[in-house]
Length: 122
Image (tube, rainbow, N blue to C red; front, side, top):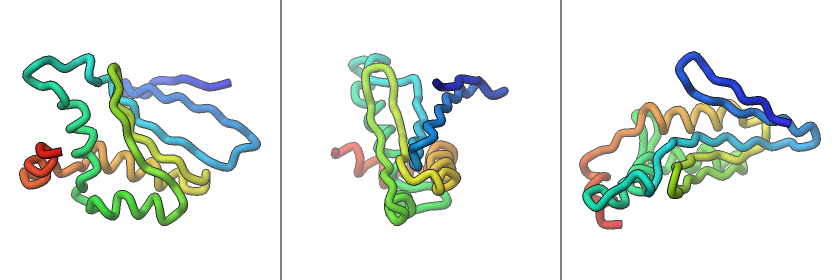
């Protein structure tokens, strides 16, 4: 059974506790995907997904990956037709780290001109 609630800022949160599982999955789902694109901005959702991993004001691209992988976790993202999801899977003891990294990517991504130009070639 899961619990769904909405924060004062409009963010919807879904929580499910499974007593016998010692891991967490933290995902940030953004209601934007390829369905929201047109000829002029085709591919922009996936482009932006990649840019979130290029570094923040607090972490380099390498540090984003390593701080999760160093504790045995996984960090990744995907873009679908209706949404883009950024997620971390790790042991439950690393819940705060997972939230910190995902929040850092959301609020502090750099989107430097150099990284934008590099990513355009992908």
